[in-house]
Length: 453
Image 1 (cartoon, helix red, strand yellow):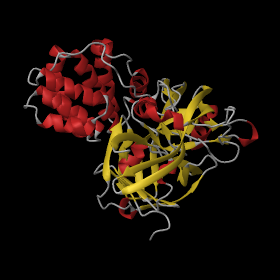
Image 2 (cartoon, one colour; image 1 turned 30 degrees about the horizontal axis):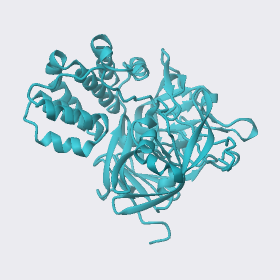
Image 3 (tube, helix red, strand yellow; image 1 turned 180 degrees about the horizontal axis):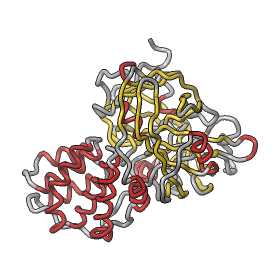
């Protein structure tokens, strides 16, 4: 998610005991992946007991994925177990397994459990998108729309519209000519950027684990010489839920260090929807390197001033498990003895905690401050009240992370941040020499604390 909060220059939040509105710009783009609440309790798969199915459904709805894994082990073989295994695989980044298991379960689900059939089809479509199989994803969304749309509170219309546009696009591919070793810096809104030369055009690309797709501004797309495909879709802010129209284009080739990629999908947005702030201090984002490219690179390491992949990355296989919320990586952190899932967003300068976090720890609200913030995203900005927790201690594996002045959203935003317990930004990793996302083993690891060699 492209997020600029408590950033540099004028994009800062000013604390004030009188709660004067501050200008805290959080800017996020991700195709909206909403948690769908059952319209009616579905009948349990025939080979799984009602009690076991109800328990597993609750695990899925609440993203209690370790509990779900434990409960699946007790289930007998059959379509019910295939369904829950496939849903777990999709949320664990094992997209090939998810497609296979859910397709095995679908014939049974179509007839006896339409609610689960709807969820399975949405997960299958997401898994096809993760594997850049847009035509297959479009067919899954089409069946979902034609047969089971009424089983979901909200049909994922934005995602379906995008893959329809891309349905004739060949899958992205990658070949290696050497390692990736790019110099990085932080831009004025606190996000990490690296300079790339694409189609002969030199520009800074924001390295964003929270972006479901790579994104460019309309002006930059023209500089690249890419032509948008036919059709228009929408994109929503991962924090505010506000939408903006988009086009899609395909970059035939793209070089990222020693990695050569083909058929790279770019979302093309109007310049103003990638502009942070207003007036002379406004910052224009022109290019974002998102999840499909990061996943293709396999293992990526961020140091203080470099972005590494391929042979240059730190691929020792250690670290905590990494999950997926749609096409956004998520990691589990311990907060006050509770294992909680958070999305990991290198496009965000700081961490935001969701309404789920607020509901879990609301007994501590008397120790939090209230502050008004202005949130800028696709389609405009809005002002709302958040709580500020002055100190938050989290554990990631054997590492301890301490964050200061963390914002807590006390209400639903009808956006991706509502799904888990929050969104971890650059402040989560700034205290460490390196951090690594391994999309092959689905693990996340922090290096040595800064100052300790």
